[in-house]
Length: 363
Image 1 (cartoon, helix red, strand yellow):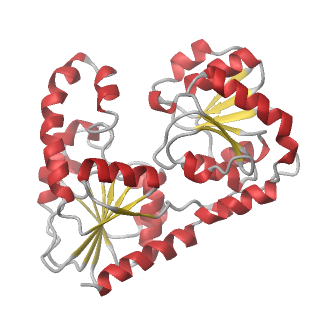
Image 2 (image 1 turned 60 degrees about the horizontal axis):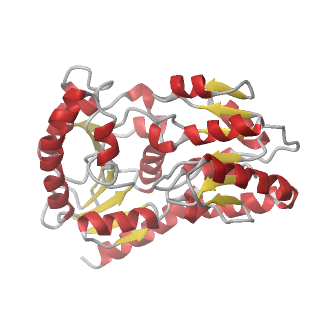
């Protein structure tokens, strides 16, 4: 069986690339197709496979400014010849599912999210964009939304990374989706013998992740908060923060493991499609204090692996932290880690193979 894996771009190693890694393990014979490739930024496992790029990869500054070429990506996908492949699995968050497959091919789309800048976050994206983008993007987005809806019809079967995303797929594409949570490398994390006196905020510092809520809350509480990550919001957050908040920037994985294992709890104030970081914290035996929306509703078991706050405000987060401090001794690191194992890599591979094999047998 010839297998093709389609991934939007390969310029870093985040959640989507971890899914691609697991698919590479499941289908070692598979070829990979992507718009842009930076070999130094991806894992040895992905790098070892045969990787084909679209013409976007040859355009100026494509590795750094691939977003510039979004208008050309539909055309680029349609130039790929996938007629010889029996199974095509597209990994969709940026444009990936719009490939043209053979009449006897099975096309499975693992959807991390319908493109957020076209659908649910379109207004936020436009509001925060530069003037040239605000003038040009509405016309481009109109064209891309038509193309995006049209290409959903070419997918034989959708798999969503969470129930939250399955609802979005139904909303924007009018398609049903099976839910299979993405893989988390539980075995890479450990439970520490001693907990240190700090809370942790970890992730990309962009607007929708609402790091500003955590900064405001900890300014008022005066409790120690460590912030790991980089992004467009970093200068503003540093200006906001009091001395009890430390910014560590980007950290190597060994340091991330250490800080996750030794924190009192992870603070997770944004709305994520799934949210791998909370599961990594739980794999370290640490509780999560998360906003009650998005993927956190599927990963955080309240009063067992963490607490949820119901309003996206500093006051609501402060109340959750104060409640946590009253009951923190009741959280069992072993029970928290046991819960995280439900999201392990082997579970993902077993579940997705079962779904794909069932679809292949029906052809």
